[in-house]
Length: 117
Image (tube, rainbow, N blue to C red):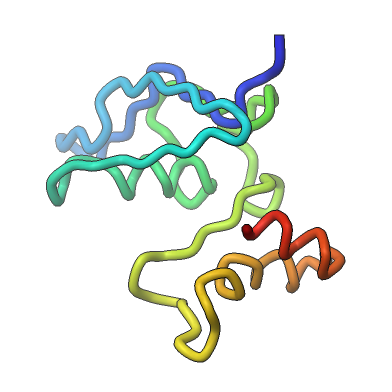
C-alpha cells in the first residue's frame, strides 16, 4: 500500500491552558485535493504550522510520504507554505507564487511549473 502524502495521528497542540488542536486524525493521499474550513480560532493555521514544522506538537505524530517528521526542523521537510495574505508577490500569477519556493530550491523550470500546476 502506498504511503499517504500527509498523515496526522492524534495531533494536539496546547498553549498553556488553551487547547488549540485537540486530537486531529487526518490522512491525505498523494494527489488528493483537500481544504480545511472552520471559524477563526478553530486550529486550522496551527495544524498547517505544525505540518510545516513552524510549531511543535504537544503530542501526536506527523508523517509526510510515510516518514515521521514530527520532530524534524522545517528545512528537513519537503513542505512549502504560501500564506493567504502575506508573502504573495502581487506582480506574479498564482502559479508563479506557488512555484517560487521550488525556484529558490533550484528545481528545474519544467518540473517546478508542472508541480505548481
